[in-house]
Length: 585
Image (cartoon, rainbow, N blue to C red; front, top):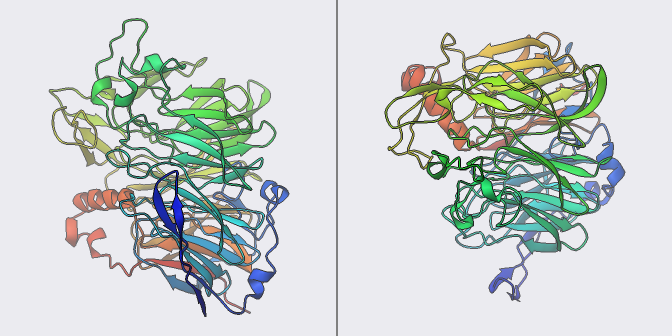
């Protein structure tokens, strides 16, 4: 092996901090790296069948693969092909695969280039993270040309040569030490129209989150959009009279969807944890407590950074029920006409459909988990909220779903050949306690998990829905909540992981269980499927659970017998990349 250690560079004037080039470990013999082809815009628009080039494989966020070597007739023969131990971290990565090379980012700011057929390391990059940076769970990297674009814990975007791991450029997006918890880069960047588009998380940072676009070739910032309006901007009057410095939230911690025809990226935004100043709206006619642009869909022009349209799904969210998740672009019939729509569901597992070009409300589909919305205006989508939508000082209220979500970052998949969407759901409610205690919310309202009435013992659910007819088809129910995204393939199977260390394949047609395996730890990541050495592989990262998995583990254990129950008997084997394939012939 060759190890390159480079001396410190000069201090960067902008931040008055010194940067160090990292140690890059590279393999002496690199035929796989040498034959890597540049990733073009055309490849991102129509990926090679055997590659997984971006977060959900395609710009429309379908999470679908056209591979069918693994199918309903042989998926039961899957076996472990290899396992690569990983350093411990809280991370939810997406393995990115191109021309037989896998790029895998770890939570400790390490990036691996691996032989996707064997797991052998081709090179490794270790970013020299600034002291005091806020560690964050990240979704992965992006590819374009000869570059791998990697977000870091200290708010850098670093462009590396995908053949060598050497730095091409790096750019600082924000001071990682600002605020109570600091900005973080959790979302995978996407490449669109010559720009790198990156959302920024800002859980309790004054002035909230934002979105940036960087020039792909130079790394220089092209534009920045703030998700909490600045004084004088549209939406400034929706924060109950609060000064900008007293507003927080609007985090952008999920990657966007891109429509190249409209040159728009679609982002979802999170609520705020500082809910107390919004609990009692002034309602004076000019000032509201809607808190734009929290819990909204933002359609932003990639070339200019201008807001094309926005739609707020749930104003003044007092229970942390995000609408931050994937936006999927679908063509659907509405009143007898085909419309290009953006569909998305928040934690309540309720889908809103919006016109992709204008943001016009089209329709909603409620998957039956929530008890907060009593009516939806068929023209505007405005939601009538039940009394339990707001905590109070006296009573505990049943609120469904639990604040960790009926659905969360474990995103859905759509099979475009059958128009079926597959969404992982956690069936759990909460006893929303009176304000005034200790909580993640500044009201102090308690968030105590409790089973869905009538559904005790089945916390996991996988729902199939036809996106064109809006018909709910089948659902698969089990004890453990889902902890991975869904991957659907042309082979008629979907892959999903759950809190009880299980990774499984189900039939897309009827939800029947076709194969499952105990991975040895919690599979908490975005699985992918790809071709390497003529074989289709399924890859998933285990043993790096985030606070989401930890929260559900505690909740399910408490409701199923504690340490003596089924969840308490699990034996964790540690973090690893685990890859499955059919037996070699």
